[in-house]
Length: 64
Image 1 (tube, rainbow, N blue to C red):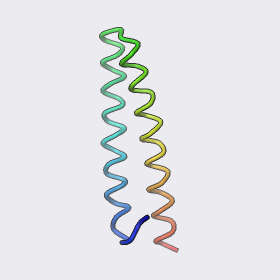
Image 2: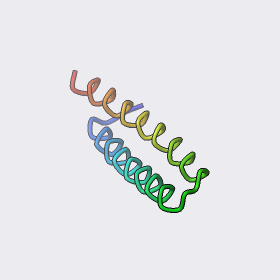
Image 3: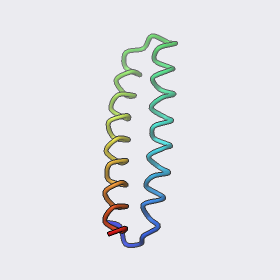
């Protein structure tokens, strides 16, 4: 739950960091040809997208 209108900024920053980690993991999986790393990157990407969606939803609620 967002208690402060500025907390969504932190969520957005963390989402960006998660997307970066997922992209690096996918790149590493391609270079190393490691399926397990690709699977971890896929799960990480899904969680990052969910975090982004929650940040957008919190921003819209605080703006309204």
